[in-house]
Image 1: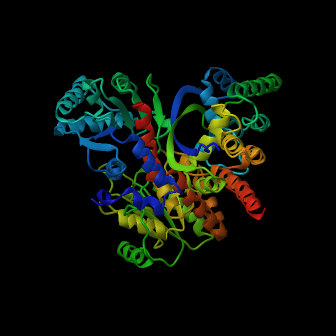
Image 2 (image 1 turned 60 degrees about the vertical axis):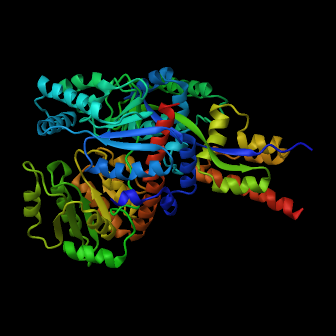
Image 3 (image 1 turned 180 degrees about the horizontal axis):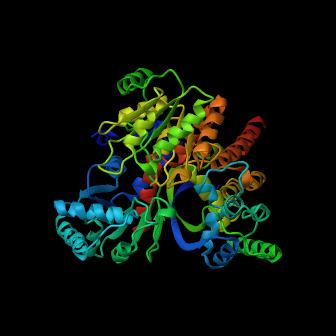
Length: 398
Length: 221
């Protein structure tokens, strides 16, 4: 696991001036306090973040553990349905499903080591652990998803459980549900030293792009995201077509293999099939290096979802010095400084207009890209995330 | 001869708490401004430097910014931008000025205020956790050199937080330089650095420039 080898000192080269020394001082101040993270999996975006955050917190002197809950196959089905319901897709959630959530929480509470000063429980699957909490620790529920449209009956059933925590943490204010406990906001972050974001030589980029069959002969417009209707890949193709009347560019759409049912990959492939300048790339598992190369090769990054979570891909593109044209969905506008690091748009025509504007003013691409990288350095690197978690630990255990 | 007490540089961690107060139009903004804790007024005015990028052309507080960009009432946005959190004397006074400005605007509006078509205004409050940076100074040169190195949050803690929320005189830098080093003239110059200079980094640069001038003057004398 590459994350385990990284030390806080390694971030001196990328973090803002004074940040690493300051984090070390905070670590000294909080030395001896114990933080326990609990999640349901060691895989996925959350795990990627914890893989890096947990060793660095330990390196800083804060004794940090990461526990994983286990459940049976039917429990996985329950948590999937609950996750969808909380995201706003109507689900049938029965009393027996909620009972399963509680039973699994109780089983895991017996098994896991949760004797920390602060216990941070991530997302809904381990939510019910709190029912067996002791009073010695403080408990925080870290919700990484948007609860603004949660299925009402489901949320009514879960809210009393959430309110047994001492606080909740959301990624954005607009994702937060009303609660009687304090609610804090902590933005997600990117790791500048990860395979996805580390510096990459031109020759290494070339190897990856050749492997993905992306020629480097024209400016590249790139959207990274699932081939799902809510990410509007067809809308991006339509915007590209409007741009193509004036500028000779390529469009690259890259996303993970579609989940069964309801995907838009077929439509995208059909729309792209008659144009050799459109590349539709179904990414391999764990495509960190591939995405790093694609983002570095891009001239402009596009994020045009109609509905979205935080969409940290905006920050990953900005870190590579790319201007971003994005919608106002989810966390996209919160990562950008509009008109400084990129533009927000609401329509296909708006996206095309902004792309043309940038392509016609190459100096603007450079200026926005540089501003975006600095904005990410200050606000969206893992060093800022560490500082937020340490602030939470200090505040909750004061 | 009494020993000079060193200046100990503290940085701060900030944690943003979402409050159960929000506004969809200017009238609701007024109602909520009357109810929120005064720390929330600090968060959206003086502490805005901590949590959002500073653009030269942007309004200096979150209330003006929201009214300007989301409600699109430029007249009120300009008036709210003119409420100077750094010269009002206290956060209660800032709240009074904001309330008086919005009330007056609504009285003259004659119609129901437009509702935002974009983001609603959500009230926050900022919790600060002071942390020693490990830097301290006994002389002007040490002070200047440490100031160049410390985490930027130390600038916020010793100037904005000290002066405008905690009520520590003209801010910790000016107070120490005036009292411990006996440099009233220099303390005065530091106290007059405009917090509207822009970002905390720009405020740092202004301090460094004043300090370097003073050090060069000493060396040349």
